[in-house]
Length: 235
Image 1 (cartoon, rainbow, N blue to C red):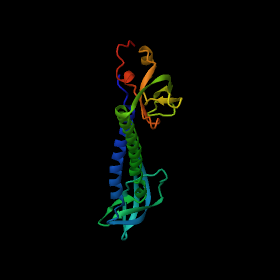
Image 2 (cartoon, rainbow, N blue to C red):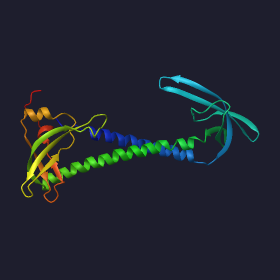
Image 3 (cartoon, rainbow, N blue to C red):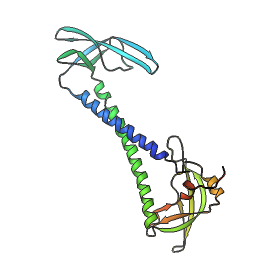
């Protein structure tokens, strides 16, 4: 039974999706904001046609406009629920091809994609950095820290932290420090399944903890015995 990789999978997915939206959104934004050859004018919505399909409704918005005294009517590349027939909206047409038009409102709308992409990338990236940092710190303490054994105190369900609608379990254990006559409580990393059965079946009453004597806030609770080696247990 290996430790669940829920956090890595979820935040990794956040990062990948965010990076995709950021790259594609940035490209679309640059393309949409490129004013080369675009002429701004006012058009009038002549009709809005709805196409129903399994993925939702699609809308064709027909707009009439004039270019150098000549009348045109074409479909714009944007729809808003506020649109209605007879409404005047700001559009642009291409100087070398007046039949190619677009909605000026799209220039604001396209910022949503890179914005969401950046947000998702930051959330996923920062979370992954924190997770990897904790893992690396734990490995360092296992090599350079002092090993003590802390008594099992309780197993709690950490409802203050949720990933993908699920909250993890945390093991709390206590250790008495004879140097300052104080009791210290250490908590394990997140466990994404209930470890109480394994702990009971193996009669575990304490856990190895690697500590930094100079700073007891730096510690690592080693739960390898229940996450990677739950042998000879009948479920």
